[in-house]
Length: 384
Picture 1: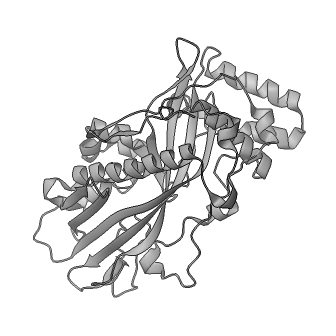
Picture 2 (picture 1 turned 180 degrees about the horizontal axis):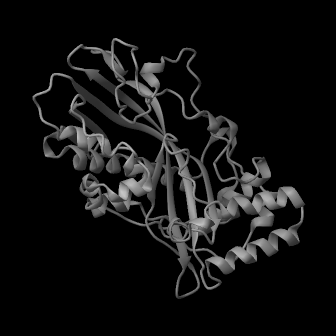
C-alpha cells in the first residue's frame, strides 16, 4: 500500500475545506447474494463498561425534576464512558447478516472502494489495526471536531465562546441559553417542518456546514439557535460548558451500499430501505435467483446507467471531556458534570458516508465524507 493511497479528509493548510478520499476500485454491479452469506474481520477492543452510570451525567435526554422543575429541552450531547451498546453486538446498522463472514465481505467490498486489496482488510493479531484504518479513523476524528466547531459558531455566533485549537484538535464551547421565553416554532424536527421554518436559514445558508453534516443531523441542534437569540431579560437561563480533546480514534465498521444514495432516496422516497428489503427477500426465500431479480428491479428503478454507491463508516473517538448544562437561576446541574470536576474519558461514535461513482476511465471516484450521525442520535440515520 502506497503512502498516497488515501488523501486526508481535511486539508491541514485550510481547516475550512474538506478534501475527498481517493477512491478507485473495480466496479461490480451487485453483490447482495454474497453479502447475505458474508462477514467482517477486525476485532478492536471497546472501552470497558463502567460499573455505575449516572443517568443525568451520561444521558442526552431531557431532565425533569417533577413539579419543582420544568422539563428542560436537552442539549443533544451524549457524555458517556462507553459507546452505544450495539457496537458490543457488532451491529453496524447495515441490515445485513451479523456474523463474521458477512461482516468481512462487507468490509472487503467497501475497502475496494478505497483501492485496497484483500490483504489490507485481513484482521491483525492482538487488536492492532491496519494503517489505512488508523488513518481513516484519525481523519474522522479531525472532521468531527471541525464539524462541531462550525456548527457551534453558526448557532451561537462569534460571541458564543467557541475556541478550537488546531494543534491539539480540541474544542471548547461556553454559551448561555434562555428557556423561559423560548421559541417553540422549530421543536417539530420533521423534514417538512424543517424545510418550512424560516429560523433554519442560519444553518441552511452555511454551505460549508451543509457539506460537512447531513441536514437531519443539523435539525437536532436548530432549537439552540432559536433559544440563544431570545430576549435577555428573563431570569431562567441555562449555561452550556463543553470541552473536547480527542486522544484516540478507532475504525469500527465500514460497508458499501450499491445503487442507492441519500439523494436518490430523497427524490424517490419509496426506495427508502430498498437495500435492506433485498436481504429480507433472501431470508424469506433463500433463493439467489429471487434476490437477483429483485436487485435488477431496484436497478431499473434507480436507473440502469447509474453506478453510484454509498460507503458508510463508523469510528469511535475517545476524548477527554468536560460537559455541563446548568440552570443559572437555581444552580441545578441539568446534564453532565458537577462544578470543578476534572475532564473525564468518554467515547463518541461518529458515522460518516460518502457517495462514489464510476469515473471516465472506468475507475471508482468518490466525493467528500459527510457526518450523518453522532452517538446514534438518529439511530444511524439509515436510508438504505
